Image (cartoon, rainbow, N blue to C red; front, side, top):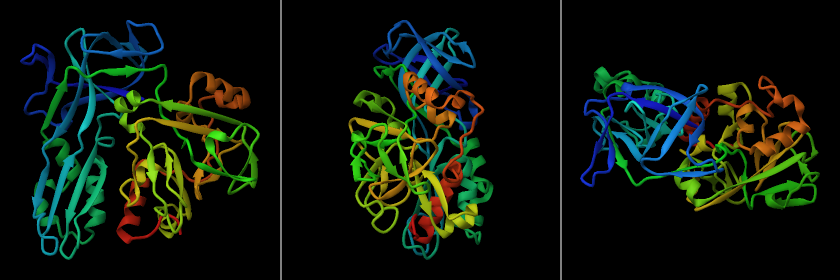
Amino acid sequence: MAYMTQLAGAVLALDELDLTIVEIPPTSVLNNFGSSDEISQYNVQDDGDAATLEQGDYLAPVTNGTATPGTYVGTGVIENAGLTLGSMTDNLLGLGVSVSVNPIDVDYFADENGNVYAITDEPLSDDRIMASLQVNLPGSNNLITIEVPVSELTDTLADLDPTGLLGPILGSAADLSQYIMDTAIITSTTDPAGTKLLGDDEHTVVCFVRGSLIETENGPVAVEHLSVGDRIITRDHGIQEIRWIGSTSLSSSVLEGNPSLRPVRIRAGALGENTPSSDLLVSPQHRVLVRSKIAQRMFGTMEVLVAAKQLCQLDGIDIAEVSEVEYFHFLFDQHEVVYSNGAETESLYTGPQALKSVSIAAREEIFSLFPQLRDAETVPSAARELPSGRKARKLAMRHLQHGKPLVS
């Protein structure tokens, strides 16, 4: 999935090699961005299944049913200067806050009227732009570092500083989220030689990486060796047969162009004692089971399913730097919790977003098995509550603060 956002005031210019670059006004801040529109498809000159775009190539992203003709400019990075208030140097006596908006990888596109757009994996809005927040409080042995959306900065700071020690140094930045949106000066770089690989599908994969061991009635089996009809042990409904299974291979070029598709590595014991029993790699959106008293207090239930990418602020859970990856996903009659490398994780959930993770042909196979899913308004029952990204990150942060395992 990709989004297109007009960069107000941005212009095209030539560098010293007479290559086109994007220049953003030196006074531009995050609030200068226009609204982000989801791109449903790309129209290009090449009618094949895939195309690699270079600077000057024709491109017409389709948003809201309308194509916007123009040219591809290249890749780049949008970032901003960090904000530091107070002292970040003395962990015992210091008192301070440091915030920086994480660099945003973009593809630049210019329409026929010269308007410049950024094409990104996420909307350029305060609830999707990620920021790194560092907090230094008296008596703390270490700086607390957390990544959250810009929109959550103020609430996150309040959670970390419930007694309001930081209030006097924040001043006009008391609403940290709004302050960053209003004052963070944007800078940009352009790589005119950058390219964009377009395929016939957008990838939002929700699945296991090759080699993941799934618990079956005959013991653990590598996911790539499973097939339709195999009998899998589920947490809630005993042994269930696989109704459909598929795979998606992402090459090095796809991962380089879409780093958000790299798998998350959950190291042995990162979720709890011996959980997982060995390193487990899953797609960023794949949900794992969290069972704790913290979940009970937040959601009224001990168990919730949380996307792996929302747990990356915790020790032992991070993005795996792989050159290529093969993802596998399988489906039962209903959403289930299964055992993978000893950890409790989800089977494929057939909500509308999840179905975008498979090819058109695979989607048709699933629709033939479950015709009701053709209705976009059908919302299948989930095996557990599925917290939003914001709530999931807050859950992870509270486990981090209290030093509690995710599974207890």
